[in-house]
Length: 483
Image (cartoon, rainbow, N blue to C red; front, side):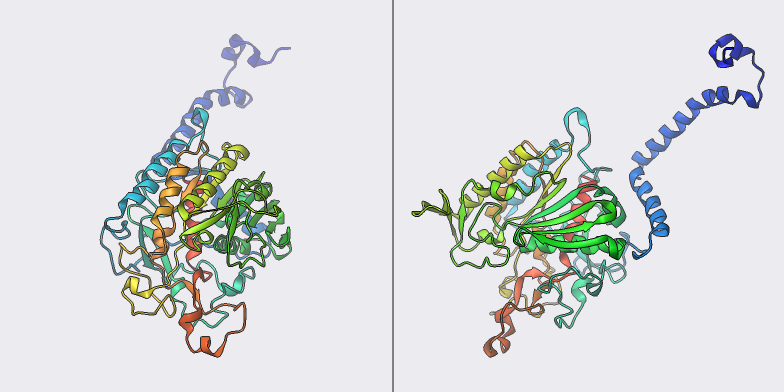
C-alpha cells in the first residue's frame, strides 16, 4: 500500500488530523527557512556573530560539566570604561610628525595587500574567521586607558608558566600600575578576548610562536590567558630539541601551543636556546629550512624577528656553511640583511603553508626604552622607575627603526600568501612603564657597583607579565577571528 504522501491526489484528499503532521512540516518549511534567513540577516546587519553566540553557550555548558577551571574567563571590559587617558585628542596615537611615509607602507600598502588576500578563491573566508572587523577600523591606532576593573586579565601568581625573567611582582616590583592599562583604538573597539572560543578553535590543532625571547613572552602570555580553563591533570609543558621547542598541551582539546627559538628565523650562531649570547652574530643566507622543518603542519603561526638583527649598523651574512673551514662572510647593512631574512620567510610560507587551512602572523618590532631624554626625562636615565605610559601621541623611540618597517612593507606586500601584520610597535612605544626593569631573575650575581646604580642593569627590552604582551594577544585574537 502506498503512503498517503506518495500521491498528490491522495494527499489533497486527506483530512486535516494529527496523522498529517508530515504534510504540516512540508507547509512550515518555507516559514522556517524565512525565519532562519531573517536571523542570519539581523546577525550580519548588527554585527552579532552566530559563532560567538554559540561559543558563549558552549562556555556555559562546559563550566557546569568540567571540574577544576576557574568559571570566569579573562575578558576585556566594555568600551564605556570611565577610566580614560589624560590625552583624549582625536589624533592620539597618530604616527610621528614628518614620519608618515613608513606608516603608510605598513598600514596602506601592506594593509591593502592583506585585505585583497583576506578571501580565498571563490570568496571563501580566511581560516578561523568568524566575522569581519569594523570597516575602516585600525586597531593598532589608539590610546591607553586606565582600567581597574578588568585589568589585569589574570594574576601573576595564578600562572605558573611565566619564566622568572618576567615575574616582576615576585622579584619585588613595588607598584602594579603597569597591569591596569587597556588599549582603546580610536575609531572602534577590540573584540573581547574569549578564552573558550580560543580553546575550541585550537581543538585538534597546533599553534606556534616562532622567534626570540620577546615572542616567547607573547607565547607565555597566551598560555596564561587560557590555562585556567583547563583542569590541572589535563595540561602539561615540555621542552624538546635541546630546549629550542617548548610545547604546552591541552589534552582534553588535543591541542598544542608551542614556542620555537629562532631569533633570526634563519640559521645563525645564536640558535642554541640556552647559550646564545655571542659578541659577533653570524647569520647563514638561505638557511630557513633548518628551523622551518619544525614549523610544517602548524595551523596558526606567529613569527617575530627584529632585535637580534640590531647589534649595529651592519650584519655579517654567511654564504656557505658553518662547517666550512674558510668561511665566506659578507658584511652588509642591517636593512639589506633583514630583507634577506624576510624574503626567506615569505618564500617558506608560500611553499609550506596552505592559505585555506593555515593563518600566518608577523609581530612587528618591540621597542626598548633606553634613553629617558627621548620622552622628556633627565639625562642618563632609562625605563628604570617609570610607572606611567608616555602621553605624547607622536612619540616614537629612536630604537624602533622605521627603515625596518619599510623593509617589512616592501617584502610582505609581494607575498602570494597572506601574512597578517601585527603592528604593535607604536602602541608599545608608549609603554615605558611596562618593562621588567630590575625586577626579574638576574643571569649572574650583581656587583656592588651595579646594585648602587639600578639604571645600569635595568632590563628595558622585556616586559612584565601580566602586562603589555597580553594586549598583543588581544590584537592577535582580533585579527584571527575578525580579519
